[in-house]
Length: 323
View 1 (cartoon, rainbow, N blue to C red):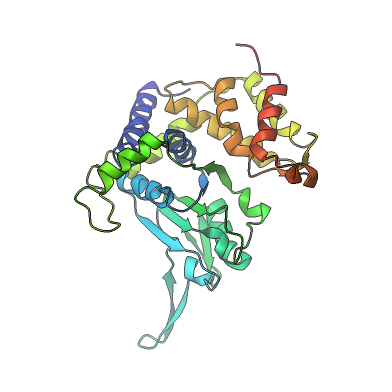
View 2: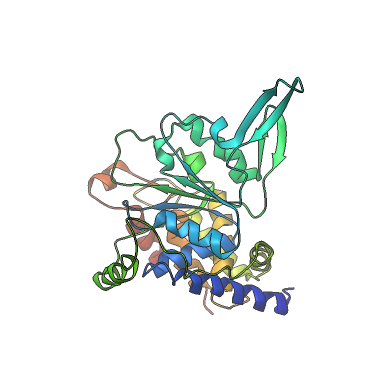
């Protein structure tokens, strides 16, 4: 049974975050909402978009608004796993080995251009993302809570990049696509960002620390208690299993896709102030949850179809439960 007092506080705090983002990020409301849904669900986010669309700024806004410790890791071909998780160092004075924790020990980890690092380095995040812990020289260390990875990648440059393996992609709750702003939004950017600013300095003074880390944990806790009717659960299963036999999909989503879709739907309900999940919640977030979990057949890719196109057709064909 959900605690209505805690639910109301969680809904209010989640929308405080939403409003706070709007003070710095102009437009991109769907991107902001999908990011907050992932945060409320306790999931990790893969953000894809061309350079200059505020992917890193989104992460900075989240960390600042929730008084969280954030760190940015620039992924490069020469980045080593120990540069992320840490390593053991020999202390000559004490004649013992001590563990130096890497930058992954933070609440919000921005993995910038994650596909520029080789698979060996990318996999250093797997244990952290799934188990909320890392192993250094055989010693297991818990990561601070909450722990959220916000990874970015550029879709237009393939030279010098290493595609993320499916096992890594599956650890991201959602893959969010960030697109160009509208002409009106871009005009507002010119007027606000460049006024009394030097070079590329970003003015975050409009942001406030609107919630605490404990509030963020309460948001995640409240989202997990939102009720889901058996018919809606079956609807989620029907959507995900349909990806495994749909014409044009070579590889469908696994069981983690069903779990992720349920978690994200609960978080979307919380964002909109509902203490139960509707089929509309599922349908609205399904594309972001599934687009990176399916692989199209080569002939569809040659014809120019995207995962979003196929998922849209699939959602129209899977019957939703009647209210």
